[in-house]
Structure formats: structure tokens, C-alpha cells
Length: 149
Ligand SMILES: [Zn+2]
Image 1 (cartoon, protein in one colour):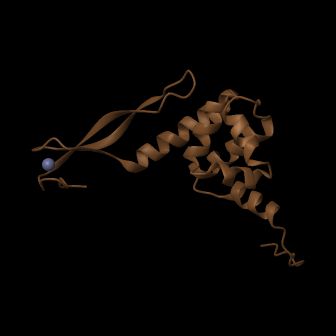
Image 2: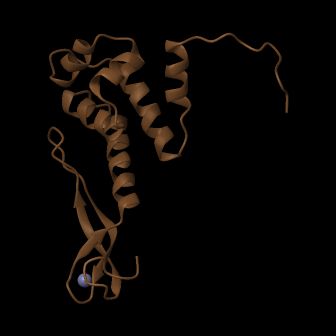
Image 3: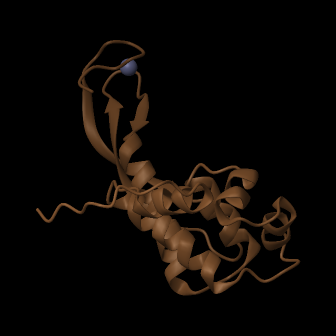
């Protein structure tokens, strides 16, 4: 963006501190790219930087090994999955997701591993984990010839 969407004047590159929501005992911050209008001071933070920040926060939480409802809920939201979509992908009851997220039942390691795979895929613009989960929920007939190159 070169011109202000509010007043049409030139904008200058800057940085702005962005914050995650409070996730259990943690709140993460980063400096994101932004632009600021020279005239009206309108500031716009770079959208892709914010998305990457959210994915990196989710990745760091999962890699920490912390298994709390707040972590599960945050990661699910960053993946843009509704609770019932996650329960369908994992073949668990919707109440199970709710129990994990409300700290009624400790989330198991497999859940965190799957969520970590989904986050890692998004960070590298891939979808293998999601494709695999979808394939598991609707097995297909196979074409038996394999192409070697
Ligand atoms: Zn302006």
C-alpha cells in the first residue's frame, strides 16, 4: 500500500507491536510490519504478518508440550476450525472437544501431535495433515498403478 485508504496521502513503512490474546498464563508479542499515513496518522498492520504471528504462537505453544484447554482452543481458532469440524476430523464426539477446551479432560498427546501437524502445514502452505484426516473419514477406492516419477 502506497497511499492512505482514508485520505489518499503517502504512507510510510513502520513497525507496530502486536499481541496475542492471553492464552492461559501466556501472552505473546511481536513487531509487525505496518504502514502509517503521513497526514492523518492512520496505521495499518500488515495482514500476512499477523497471520504468520498467530501460526508461530500456536506452534510455540504446541512445541512447549503444554496441554491445557486454553492452548487447544487458541490453536483450533488459528486453524479456523469450528469445534464440531475438529471433532469430525478426529472422529471424537463434540463433547470431547468441549471437555478438552474446558480443562475437564487432559488433551491427549495424539491431539497435540495432529494440531502441530496442521499448524506446521499452514506455515509451509501445505495441507497433508488435513488431507490425511479427510481421507481417513471417507476411504476411497484405490487406483492400483503407482507412478515412479
Ligand atoms: Zn491518511
